[in-house]
Amino acid sequence: MATAEEIGDRIVRAVLSRRLFPGERLGESDLASLCGCSRTIVREALNRLAARGIVHVRPRRGWFLADPGPDELRKAFQARLVIETGLIRLAASLQSREIARLRSHLDRQRAALDGSDAGRRSLLLGDFHICLAECFGNPFLTATLRDLTVRSTLSALQHQSRAEAAQSFAEHLGIFQALELGDMPEAEARMAAHLGSWEAKLQPPIPANGLQRLRDALDIARAEA
Image (tube, rainbow, N blue to C red; front, side):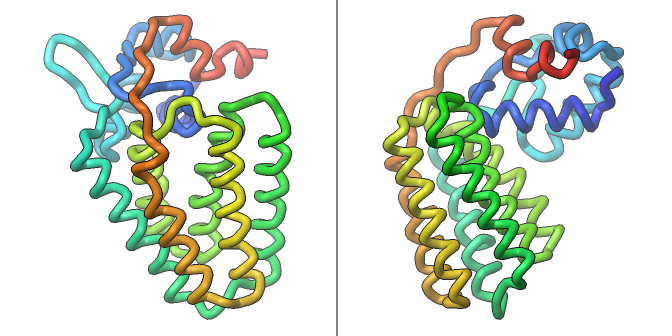
């Protein structure tokens, strides 16, 4: 039986993998059936996500993923820019273990670029920012950044091309190289340029198509295996 935390984590992961889209309906009964738990647990998970701005409830219609408008999206990226450049600016350098962790993450991003799983590629590209925040050791800002990343992903490119993904990876690599050299001003500048290009990376959302999409997005079959 899935817990509320596990259900919330699956939904967040599905968003970061771009397998759930803005405005997608999240039926309590469907989720309870797919996750093998009660609607009470599902409702707890959705209420937690609502407090984080990731889902919302519509009276007599049910739960839906957020669908940020242009103004909200711009503010989310502004907040990310402040947090992510600020974390770099406040740090003197990263320890060798954090550098090794980031290098390993980039290796996984590179492997995903060479593969055919666009969802995994997207997940790793988004997770790089969360991983970097964790390396700077501020759990409060990391938690805030995680939610902002999910919310901005809800309106970001739904099917990122390989070329666009490769460009994002190249920008991540440039940020890492500056951090590895201990050049924090250069790393900050590269992060600002990377996040500042968000408007060029957006496309209209793809509409949802029911229970099977929800099953696939949450990896229910894989989780049951």
